[in-house]
Image (cartoon, rainbow, N blue to C red; front, side, top):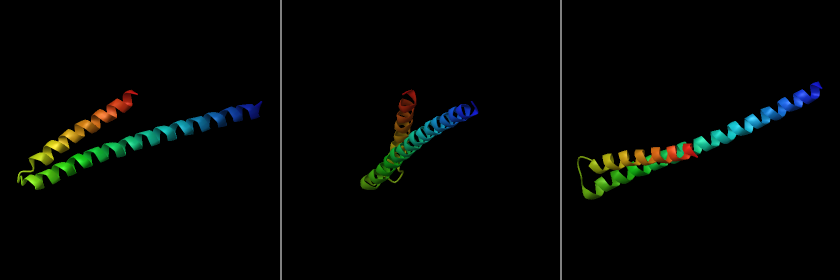
Length: 81
């Protein structure tokens, strides 16, 4: 009887561990994806400012804000799933 209880607890702990690892990998992947989107948007704006010789870096500002909005949209879309 005690063995069956321990076996059930062990199985429950393994299932909880699998679930938490799955969630960890899902959300850490999402964080890296968001960081990549923000980095590429900011980097693209910086390079565009250099190309067009803008001294006030307006394209960097616009594209970085736009990339943050896109990253938040991607995160919310993934959370809704």
